[in-house]
Length: 633
Image 1: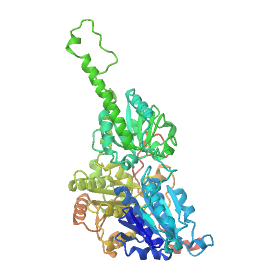
Image 2: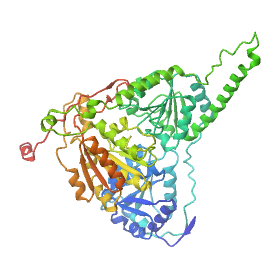
Image 3: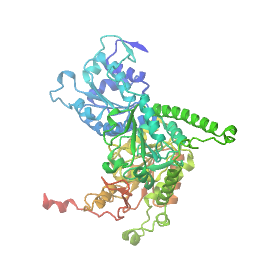
């Protein structure tokens, strides 16, 4: 802790950020931030000049999710602030600790509709965990300490700090401690589960015959993967996950049943329907997980552990709520269960002594089972469902050889990869390089590319970074750049669709400018595939889904000075990905995939067991030239 005086607001802000351990800031300067960027010249912090503020927020988000520290982004007043909004909302929905700094017009003209003035405070309020506007330079250091404390503790989330230009240029009137000593009396997150609720949970588990664990993103955020695995193995309970929970238990583990929900595995969705006890850890029961709420887990008592009390009972009725940190609750459960298991073993031992066995009138305890928790029949059912599910998820000969070509592809002899095969190729290559996934992160965009990855890529670790709540197209590529700054020695691969990649393709300039070694994989089917699929499922006419034949992604990447290759078969995809990862340079791989292939889905609002295979059909071409529209104008 140090004391500083004779500094202006911008200098104090820089020192406050340094004291919080900030290593990198993602942002874009503007007129009201000139003093901040002037002071930044004297700092050791890295600043990454993004090509759009939305990408700056996504980079800060990716950085935060992997590092566990607050990711910092900054934008100027007005349009700079509004450009941050989508990225901050994405972080908010997925509980990611981002500090979003925005410049603001001078305090004395706020409300006068000055140049580039916007009500940032009002705009960010519903999409942040907390929101500050600094009105005195002397408050700046305290507010920065509070912002980091709020963002990174309890249920993490973004915090917005709005900074009028006169606050940044104004001198502090007194010496201040950095970091500040703070006590936020109104903010005391509950981290320890109530002992009575822990006791009720154990009783419910011991009385169940078909228990199932549903693990969400809260497990990864709490760094509770080890505890989850120990808890599951202690009782031999199967584990399914939400999208945000993928990888919190190895999906190659025998107790893992994979993803659940709208695009979940057959095993997970059916097990939720059949279980008599659902133990939810760190999930929020979104509509993508529950399907038809009235038919979700119809036979189950529900236990819900979450650090945010607002999530408990919000979407699903809960029988046993436990508010607290997932890691701490699981540790307490494991401790109590182990104690009970030892007692059980001691009782068994005492029942089976030689003395007892020689007594003619000895009556064994009829309520004492040889197993601590006897769910053997359930385990058989789980195994059977998993085998059926694995068969459905595996690649068929037809898919491998891509025999399901469209008429156009057959006539023109166009070579493309089946998307399921492409994901297996990516997974196989990544595991060849990093067998335990210890040093690899995969980001995805939103749409079919995300769901193909979620269904077919088996993660051994929580190495998947994706936009789950807001479903933000354009997230995956910039998030990957942020991940790389958090884990500079890791292999980082971004998977995007062509539509999503185009939403932030300008960040190829950022990647090239700083020579950031990330591999950007683009699944190109020249269509908005998920919208096309939904239109088909709902029997709607196809409309506005054709992305046409531009751009040429290889030429686009080359124009930024980034190496790029186009692949259209498994052999080339594997070889190119391996080369790109080992080269450790910025790289774009365009994967030509069939436009007609869909992702297996539960229709919106339907029962989870009613999964349908959408019809594989090519999107219609909708190209109408401007000259043909003129008559309608």
